[in-house]
Image 1 (cartoon, rainbow, N blue to C red):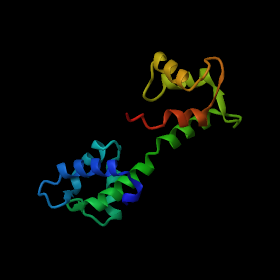
Image 2: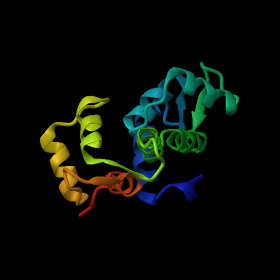
Image 3: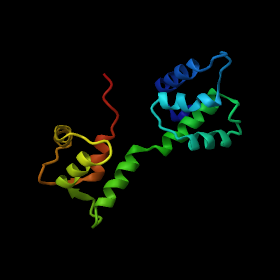
Amino acid sequence: MAKFFTPVQINEYKECFSLYDKKQKGKIIAKDLITVMRCLGTSPTFGEIERHLQVHKIEKTGELDFSSFLTMMHRQMQQEDPKAEILEALRMTDKQKKGYIQASELRAKLTMLGEKLTNKEVDELFKEAKVKSNGTVNYEEFTQMVTLPPVDY
């Protein structure tokens, strides 16, 4: 499973995992799984946690090792692909399936739906993506730009 993560990610996961390894035996109790996963930036539901445990044949009162945890994190991260979610939402707006939507329509969606952005935040996004307020937006390029990992100095 390590091939799916960078060494930095694995170290971060190991550090968080070990905080919940109360007996220091390289295992955490299953009921702490949701907390550890959420601490590391994923958002699993209780149902998703149950499925992860079932796949690995781990009882709700059982324990899991770091290797199983990494597999679960990988599966959870694949489920929560923000790029795919954003693209799907924007594709639904593109009635003619041309790959473009009006900038004004994108602004309305970003400021009125979900985790609402301010007009100033949208202005900054548009500036960074070189989008003109009265133009059209290639939503695949826009999604690619907004889902790039932050610059690590």
